[in-house]
Image (cartoon, rainbow, N blue to C red; front, side, top):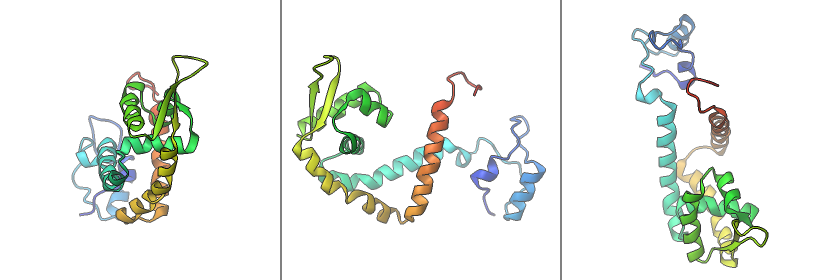
Length: 188
């Protein structure tokens, strides 16, 4: 039996009380060799986008971990360093905006990076409340070693770069859509 794809599942009728496939969906699934005799369960774990995203994120981070450990970085610290290698110096707020992280999450990361000698944390002369994060010479030098990380990840995953770029594009679209959703349930 062939499992229906996520795109085929999006065509399932939206009536939660009747999770039957539409006629068009049934034809599409049948043409792919999928068993259409049983209704599709809209709550099946393998159908959940959130589950796929969480497992994918956790799995991909585990691919990064052994590559980052020799550099003395965790994956969240690596993300901070990526932002700084591209835009240093940055305020904590700017780093948070780039990485979609809040200040309480960033503060311990930045303290550890400063303790490791990779960044400096300095109060802004213009606004004492603003903390500026800047790369040290050691932090800038680490960038050279970090250039080996992306190709190593691609090689470990064994997925073509074009597929990974398409995935990143799709995920960027999902992130944008999720950020645009109002906090009121059921409204868009």
